Length: 515
Ligand code: KIV
Ligand code: ZN
Image (tube, rainbow, N blue to C red):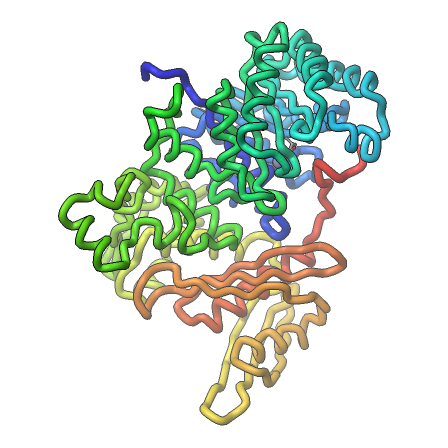
């Protein structure tokens, strides 16, 4: 590459996971991390290890498995966080600690209740502590987008002098606009005397829909690392979307002085995997990965594209993985073909038993559905993980009666901690009846906030993938379920959410938890 390198720091597993309901299990994080590594992401921020024992184990597992990408753990600028992050990334081939402390007047005064001098001192101390674990240290002045540039220069100079190798400038609340944010980055690089000793990075939130624009403006101003997430997942309105950043820089080579080394053909696989695991479906008109992103509807457009692709297409769909969405397996495919395709999709099984279990599910699905696509295989793995991980409630059987002019009725048997229980309920529709029957048995008292159904592939034999979001005492989780029968998929997703509510482990949020 004759251009400077643009480092891609993916934070889907950390900031992405901070979206309400998007929390991921250890195994889900491992699957996504493998896909990110296959896409050649430079740095994977795997989580916030102090948040809970589960988070610590997840970051450690990613650090053990990922070999080619750097694995990063987030830590507030305090000893216990840094120690935990340092321990979690220890097994990594290449590990990074990302420590942060707020620098905006509003955050220092109201959240931290610290003076600017105390903030500088704590930041320097945090970097010093992190050096006991790694030389690869990133420091973020949180809410930099609303911080005073003079103060930013002071703290950045101090942490670089202490050994920080990446300085990340977050627009934490998504307040900035492109030309101002670019100007801030330019100023910091010019004014901080030792700025040449660190890579400048940006981390933009999308509250005003400007995360990608702000990130690209920063790149033009000298930033050489961008923090982003698959599908733009992230706190509130999300983070800058990885696929949009990459494809903007790739497509407009003429406009950017740098490029990434990412394998863009893996983008769609990653997008679908993250959507499937988190239940955050991608809107059809989403750039790059939306179902309509390369679909030309009007006759004029189609005519133009058929004559010459460049008339209406600025990118080739196959460059981001659309053409690889092919039929892979069917009813007669054997175990070897199944295993080979799973390996191609970066899905590894921890044991022969796990492989056999998923293979049996594959055979059952292939009996119901003629064509099995990559998305079906990913959904099978998600499903089997759901069954094995800490499920207190399991679906045993479901019978639903629907008839024109009659009230739908559901009869449900669940296994709760090893004991079968049965209930019957009427409802406005089959799904409503089903959820009411589940609630009769479990009496969880959750509030349903979202119910959405998505066809995993095309055709009426497609599996339906259902996402529900439920809330209990302020704790929000998403549940997923897939099946060729959407009522069964709905029941599975609701049960999955209830299991997560029951297993709520009380995690600490990096930006609101007490230090
Ligand atoms: O948005 C933010 O400021 C963050 C920091 C932890 C970098 O996510
Ligand atoms: Zn963030």
